[in-house]
Length: 292
Image (cartoon, rainbow, N blue to C red; front, side, top):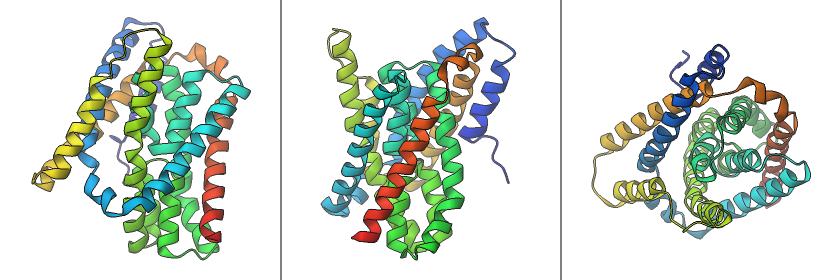
């Protein structure tokens, strides 16, 4: 059964309604409130990041995910400049591909002050690729006769959003799901230093006093709280549910802020960047898993 409260449908609903209220005061208010709600949702997202699980797997997963994230960022930034893609647009697509899809895009957007159009385009590309991955990855895994652990690692490194990683790996098997979840959590961990780095870079470029966004500290604090205290898991689940609803409402407001007249200036290059990065990381990680 379709969940119409999911981020994908919320974004699409907002985009659809934006067609009828172009340049209206509603869009201005939607843009303002989407930024505030987005920051709160990012903080609540910290409840889902269990650092103990990440640390229990040692340095292997940390190195593996760091290599993957770094490589995607390197290629993404280079291609963004070569294709003359808007800087913020390219960074959002690259970050979404490198770390954790829509969550990474939503978290980075306020740090680099991306507009609604850049956010909407990036999220749409990521959501479409996620939908494809859920169905295609298990088929490819079976054709290459990947083991449960191999597929779990591949899915965790190459699929954008955690929900899609879980869906694809669950179709492949229980062990694949367990492996994928752990590696994906480790990959998500790199969102913290990424936000800190781009926060400082953005403020240095504006010649301002460097102050880190409050919601990054909130994200880290909540993650530490739910990792190292005996808070019942039901509380974590409840906060994760609220965070998901917050993201859905945020994406609805972002979609509502979308300006259709800017669509012509986007072109096919951002789509090419998103698809190209995804195919590249999927192919290289699969080759590495089969080789080693």
